[in-house]
Amino acid sequence: MIGQTDRERFFEQGYLVVERLLPETLCARVRQAICEFTGVVEHDPATWRRHDVQGHGIVPLHHAQAMWDVRQHPALYQVFAALYQTEALWVSVDRVSFKAPAESFTTPYRTDPLHWDGDPRLRPSLSLQGLVYLTDTSPEQGGFCCVPDLYRRLDQWLPEHLDDANPLQPDVAGFDVVPIGAPAGSLVVWDRRLAHSSGANRCDRPRWVQYVTMSPAGDEPARVAHRTLYREKRPPPWALRQAVPGQRNPEPGAPATLTPLGRRLAGVDPW
Image (cartoon, rainbow, N blue to C red; front, side, top):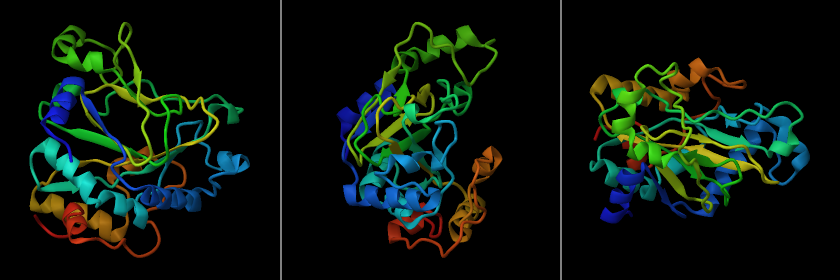
């Protein structure tokens, strides 16, 4: 699915875009799950503020069947396996996002500053994050943005900023912030040591995203814990700590149906 040139580009700039990796029909099913959860109607702007978190857009939904169908899609798995250079992976139980246009908000429109989700000084080994665009998404549509030049200089930059007040929010003055657009079904995958965020949605249509990543499989107790999230339809502990309004624990209904690959990715079956 990706070749050596793609891997080299990823490690040089800190991110990779794999366009049209997943089919539009699958993206549409995830959008429908978001609509059912939030009360949003996809093509009715009057409903877009029904899910209002000041523009940030996180929807605390983790276990819809369509979301698991994205996670267990073979093409998605192959990208992460190629980057990690291992087949034994687990998939994250992450969330989705519906970001309405900024102009639809009467309250201040919040965007997160450029940040790392973990201290980059403490992550010497490869650790990935990712998202799938669920519609065609322009760079101005509140999509993923990042600072590749800082990533390239990170090993030199970090020792010079050991006393920064907030180790997770770098001062990016002097660096170019690059917004990333891509067609529906595209995967954006990035190194956790890449400073990133998502911008304000300056378009007239929402941004739809599913966050998804994979990591090398761990030990047996970790597998049991990962399996429990799937079987009991629970959010991961980090999501509960964030306390996004509307979070359910557990989510209602039976667990999603998994393929043989999906069962391994969810920790149900060992590798």
